[in-house]
Image (cartoon, rainbow, N blue to C red; front, side):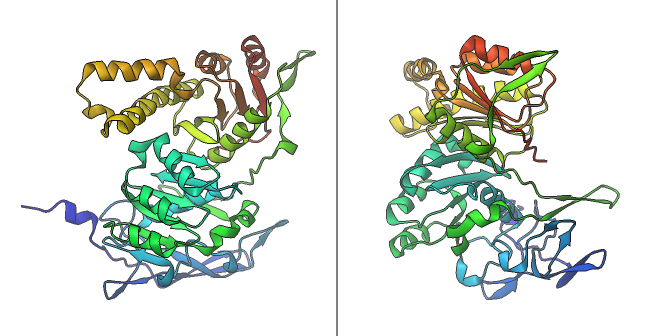
Length: 412
């Protein structure tokens, strides 16, 4: 009988060259293929997106690229592609492409946070993000934001992992845990977990420098053609967002209620997280925690509706797991299930008092109407729709504060 499970742990190998050079006009970028010692052998990535797809990681080793007025990332800025064996602890499976792309997606969120923050990424999207005074509490809240999706994900934190945090982490299954440091007791707790990769990345302590560093992103088309684009520069602070206001046919429309300090904090939190979510994306945030994230949808209001459905399901599962030690789908006691559903409904799945973040403008007021029914009190979005005035009118009807960032943050 064929062992289908074995396929996922076997190292495929690859036929990619040891070195690669990319030429932009007269400028050259030189790369070397990365390999690590694993079980006595020196090997590259396990495989690509799937078993059977060869893949290789290349580290930038020589470049001083400048295009126009923009100077791009240099070899000294390596953080994922230059991981050394001493920074990598593997038990069981060797690292593959998806581990590194999920790690990279998490870093592109985490770089915007100064406070202790935990980011869990699954399939290139965050499942949960939380900021707290301690990294343990941040992890617990990020995990419970979507406990089911976090299974098999990549956890990245911007503080040292201590014993208390490690004891929470080992209660769940994660493929990768990355941190600037692990204390000895944490390592003892974590290394007993089979198939978990631990990555000690010292540069996580100074991740803020990557907010403004630019890279060239390459997308290969079906015919072998390539689209090149700059990486996004989307940092937003209180200083460069504005209360929603537009001029429509000579009339000025603006949201009457200004965001409170707490709403502003949560809106900026949500906006930072959106940087790592595939479009169309909508998310709800409250108390520096993601309540629900919807990624990859084709219409704005549909993404909002799905995010709301997820919020109800995830909160019900959290209550069930914390109370009865099992996921909601295993609960067979109908009375207990109905009680949980009532609790979730009473709190609007923690959406009441939350804020909503949108990676693109709201083309119609329907998105505001849907969010308002759940008790959302603040909205952060780029602005720029021809019907912005309708969304502003809707916000004023419901007493919702709304701000414009002036920047769209699509991610494809």
